[in-house]
Image (tube, rainbow over all chains, first blue to last red; front, side, top):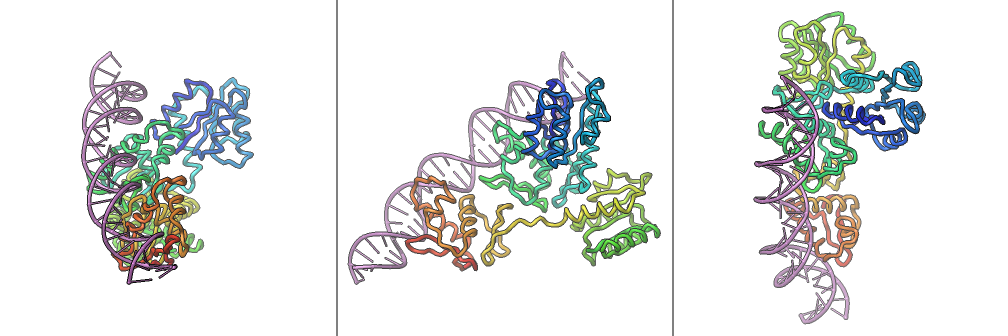
Length: 225
Length: 225
DNA sequence: GGGGATCCTGAGAGCCCGCTGAGAGAACCG
DNA sequence: CGGTTCTCTCAGCGGGCTCTCAGGATCCCC
């Protein structure tokens, strides 16, 4: 679940970044409107959080441009109370929701979740592979009756695998989708986390839902192993 | 497209029945859990709409029982807001989606459609030559029902041959396509790997899908040998 | 039928790939 | 501010895969 945050104030951007990641989102940050539009063109975001006050092309521009391009990704606008544009304007721009600075992170998170719920009418709450299940909305998962306790990163990894059952996904793809789009680290991190996951969802049950395809990547068995 | 509605309240059952029929579904109604399980055992439903509050065996029981029996039919649970079980529980039971009463028929219909879309198998194009098959996305292959265990290089070779059935491909071409474009080694490697492949896909089955065209290259028989 | 070219195959060496344990650093929580 | 959790790095290891090589088998042409 990827979110784009368009915000030039470093501290706000960093805080939102951290918070959303902790909730299992994959976050990209853009400091100005031009960069934002570039990212939007090449990526498929679930939600865009957009500050109106930006250097260069402002949020107003960005929102109009992407709507004109036929992109319907939900946009949540951040406005300063004393800003040039007020809350009412935000909705006219094509935004789906707005939030006035300063805001609490909890509220932001709630609004984002609301947008996600709203924008995904074809939402299918529970992903399944055999008796293995995961509910993205409730942020829970389990095997049969047994609940599984996963860290955010493990959860994101399992969610992505469950969305692509019986398909081999490469480590590069996993890095891009579950980690960052331009992750520059050691792909070994994927192996490490697949290992963690296996020790939670497979080993205790004597199953093997996650298969290694040597030289290619990993595959989640649609029957749960 | 058959739907089972498990609901004891006559007026709700009748309304849902009427509505779904108008949308082209074939509908069965069960007033209690026991009847529901009986119907499920003998019929193949596309979706099951299940009220949790039932006389006798309740929805909780029904859902767990059919999941335990390995039935993966999508289940949409109806819960009363003040009920014994809440929405969150529904997911643990093995349900795929839930809806809180009272609900509008439009919403119910949308949710059912979503479940149908998701349970529809997203088929990836599978390459075939007779009973020999290879699924590039899942990275699996086999002969008939029997699964074949190939190494990455063997898999790549077979995939390329299957993409060019009944065509003679030279060793140089295979080296360029399956190995590196600028492969500088001994072309004998192709012979070696064709040998490996034959011992896995042909010899055990008494077939000969891969033919040698002396002086030219190899050809894969489109009928699988 | 002989001889050369081509193909097949068994054995084995090296190495790449993926797995895992240990641990550092950062974030979070009381 | 101390403890805990989570993320990520690193290095070692073990196994299987890739590839080389050489000798034998097969084919084709003269």
